[in-house]
Length: 296
Image 1 (cartoon, rainbow, N blue to C red):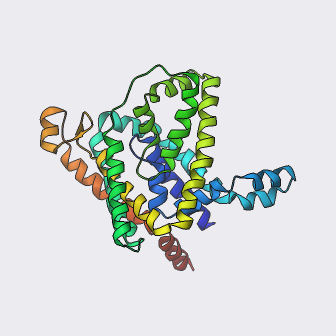
Image 2: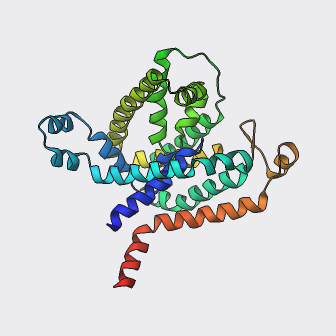
Image 3: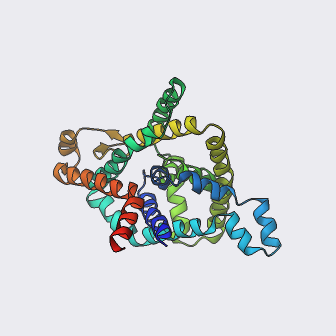
């Protein structure tokens, strides 16, 4: 039961990250040590799973796709999205600096754990730098405006979901870059069911294909893939730097002069809160085992 609760809590963290454009739920999954299991579970939705479904072997199917893990995780994600969406939307508009600072704290606290998880070589260090440069490059791209054709909703869904499960890159930010964020949001708010179905189909196809590719990478080139993904997470700090103007990193002092109140003290408090929160999340198992011993 405690294991299930841990998965739900980690899902809550992933959902909170997914609500914020520029932060990826995949980042939190990677940091919290459930990324490889998540990819393996998604990748298990294959022909073997379809065969078990058609044979009516539902228990075997549930075990095959790691159903309990996925159920707990997605329950946490959905609960977080629906409960925190309004709060985070408010903070994005009215207090963006402390919000971004909080997510900086989450990532900074996780870096020692991520760096220790890799057996470093010269090649893996190079891949780490490539990951940083890739994430920074994506973060510097400017959004485009376009009139989308129907097929573009399918492609946008496939690309955005790939970004969502890739640590360090936000699916919603990729939609912004592609010029599809507005059209997709419009389709959702106006319940354009045909467009939503196209987008959802793209998401499913992209998720099943890309998760297999990432799962294969981690199985065959584990530490090299971890080094690259860790670099992507570090590079994501560029995109979520608290003080930005026109997608450019600026100092708090220039932010104060050009944009709005720099909120330096709330930002410092938020970074510390993020570090404390991530430390607790990273030590969930120890905390749960400690509480059970105390109760015993």
